[in-house]
Image 1 (cartoon, rainbow, N blue to C red):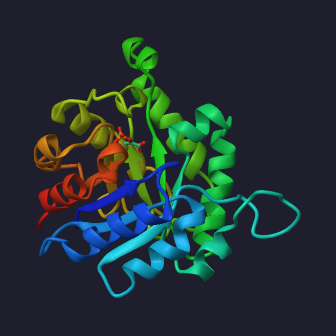
Image 2: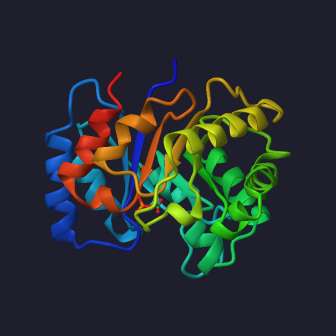
Length: 248
Ligand code: PEP
């Protein structure tokens, strides 16, 4: 049985005061037997987030990491640095990184290797654009992103996949539970063909306008193992309701 996992992606939002208020409320009010929970604030807020969440069941992760472990890479943050700080998770290949920072599947693969080597659990994002879905290419695109990131990896310990249709991110449009389930089942089938991955044990999160009113229905699908949550993770009550919907 795969335990549900709910991860908040705070993107480039918030101040120190927001981190204290939001995480204070989330860590103090986590529902019993809720989904495993993590939040991914901006790099500059990670240390504070770790302090606020210390002793609670809320884990902290980063939104990205470098593909290199150290060196002259101005502006970058490495996976070993995140591990040293106490981060447990890192989001990789988010569509906003692919779109605004031209991240290729090769780069995502290198970051994945770096994260696993440092002992950080990777959440690898895949998903098609609206044009690709309308053109009947959704499965081909997602299979290509999975292959590009996962093939040839030495170690895929702790791998989590997040299916995030680009057309549903921050738009208020959500894939229907049936649409999401169909893609999650397809992804699990792809994972079954990847060396070193136990497809049945691997958690596949859904991301794209997950809110308190659609979380339970999404989580009721056989292959949906939780959510990567953007906008709604910035509101403690909404995020807690989503986490609560993932009760075992
Ligand atoms: C995301 O960016 O990972 C995301 C899922 O955002 P939202 O929930 O706002 O659609």
